[in-house]
Length: 162
Image (tube, rainbow, N blue to C red; front, side, top):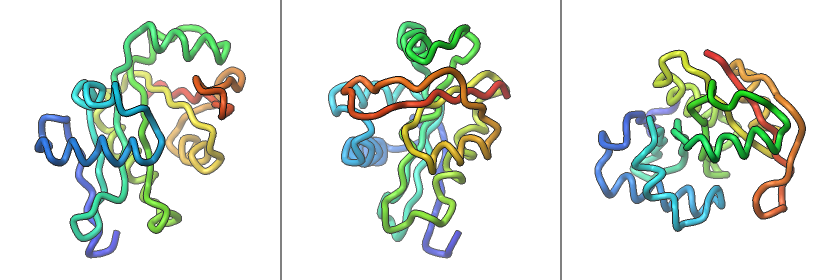
């Protein structure tokens, strides 16, 4: 990473309220989630990853701890069994368009994944670029594509056991 690029990873309580709010705003602006539930979901995350350029947030990622009902729904839509062995979800991976193609998304994802203690992780994406990143991080595509909640995207489920 260049001298003006800084990666920070830690539990949500290792970041100040302003940083967590910037993370929430960045993810919402990227269209990764509705604004209503994200603040509590960020607080419940295992780890947050943020990339800054000259103090501007340019990238995000999180190791989330979704509830079993949500995990069961995702796995059922993809036609995959055993969501209980995947307690973590890699998500909210986004890099500002001006900084893409520099490997930041993979660095962010890799950094937050260090907080898993070897437990199962899943991720969903509709992006070919993210699919390639996930496969490069040891994920395997599982099941069938399925429609996102808003019906606008076809999502693929990826799983990783370590």
